[in-house]
Length: 367
Image 1 (cartoon, one colour):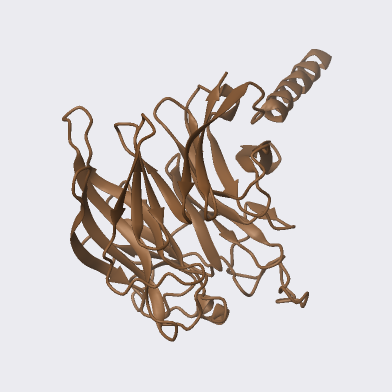
Image 2: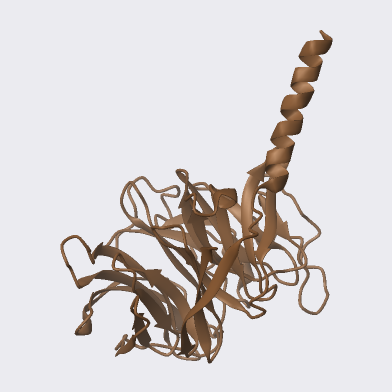
């Protein structure tokens, strides 16, 4: 019996020792790949190892593996780029095959459109070629709520393995109660097809575009081991990582650990019947900005983790499920600037896009 107890104790110790060492990154090299990028919002890796950068004021920059840069203008209908608005995210939906020497492909582009008095999140499809830039713009979807605030758009795009797409939408800041109103598109994750229709078998017959509700300002959105994970900004505290299930309610503004920026309490509840609690709560806030799946062995300790970039904390975090719950560990902190986006290439290198009027791209590789 003692031998069995000792074996069990040893097994537990081994599991814990593995988990405690997971997500440590000690030996790496950081190289600057590009600079002089004005107010970028997102970064997309292409099969030829070039990158597409979206800029809030209506520009896409292609940065090649040789570090050359070329800008292309985006003539988006009614682009509204004040505040947190502008061109938000790019998603490759077809083309750009390196094996077939394809230098063009199809994109989805999320952006804010309208005026100061009436603006909203919109999505278009477009063709992008290395020589001609953007052509063949077609409207796909826009949220049903106009607002007068230039903040909390969301806009992160995700392709579903079973077909169709998701996009995150923010609550518009002054409209936070709409996150709980099923007929509103604010504070939701929206499901749609390329022809602008809702996904089949919606969770809510009366609101067929709504995939999930109760979100504040959702940013990162990824498919990880067959599940959908999302993170969002809380107010002062209460940033969250969530496991997204169709039809679920994620609580904002009824449940939150964050405070209003004035210091006032937003809600007395941190849990409520029928509402989901986060896997990870960041209080104080880190301001999570983007997320990528790390499924490679180049950094063996990061395999099967989520990488989360942050604006306020200025760190890159690894998030993983441990024996006693989900953990978030800072792994890269010496860039000492706001981090806007993170991506992982086919070789397991990590790419980080910084924020601001003179942003840079860094490549992080094993040393």
